[in-house]
Length: 302
Ligand SMILES: Nc1ncnc2c1ncn2[C@@H]1O[C@H](COP(=O)(O)OP(=O)(O)OP(=O)(O)O)[C@@H](O)[C@H]1O
Ligand SMILES: [Mg+2]
Image (tube, rainbow, N blue to C red):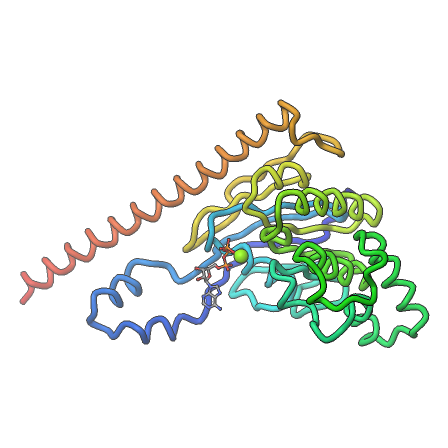
């Protein structure tokens, strides 16, 4: 990891268009008043983070806290509402070939009508890379993810883990500086998951890419990451804790120290979730007390 900041997230906030939600509840209805009156409509608020070039960075947080939202903003698929998100000090305004994305579900990301080889070559073809060159690049990427010999198969002839490797190979072939991975191994069996984790570490070590990786699996986070960001819960979710994993690679998941570190990280995550939920409850309570007080005052005024 170099000292150069690759991605900087500065006071970033995101709210989705809630018009549709508001339409579900007509005004005067208590659900509407609760929603509008007491809850922030920011999913993410005041997110601050620096990721160094070549860093393996993990995001952990409760379901719905905004991890995918954040990755989509870094990928350039979504606009932020406020703050700054930069890559090499330039504001991210859309997708770019220096960023490669690996989604959780390979089925929605790879083309069923193209062979493994053609799937991996796809981005290169779009960029006008000549046939021989893209063949070689795709071949090397497939070898890297352990899919040598499967080049001419179609996706429906592959297992889930193999499809996920195709997706990873396609990202690697495009040679992005940053790999953005949203629970890429989430749906895989334990054995395949472990193999792909080891392959990913090998690829990362070999290529020096910056990796942003979301997982719900704390053991996976500790096995893979150099640094872990922990989110509070939405609304107004932000990164409330940052952990540095102080072990060199390869790590042994059965090592007692690693086991202790997994426990420590679990506690940190649980604390972040608990304390932000308590804060939300307190806010709601204060808001409803204010509301009752206002109502009492307005009755007196009448
Ligand atoms: N297109 C959208 N429009 C409105 N709200 C959205 C949209 N996409 C996500 N959200 C909301 O934003 C919040 C964060 O969603 P996001 O998918 O980023 O969470 P996550 O942390 O990735 O969750 P998970 O761990 O379950 O994948 C959720 O409350 C979700 O309902
Ligand atoms: Mg998600």
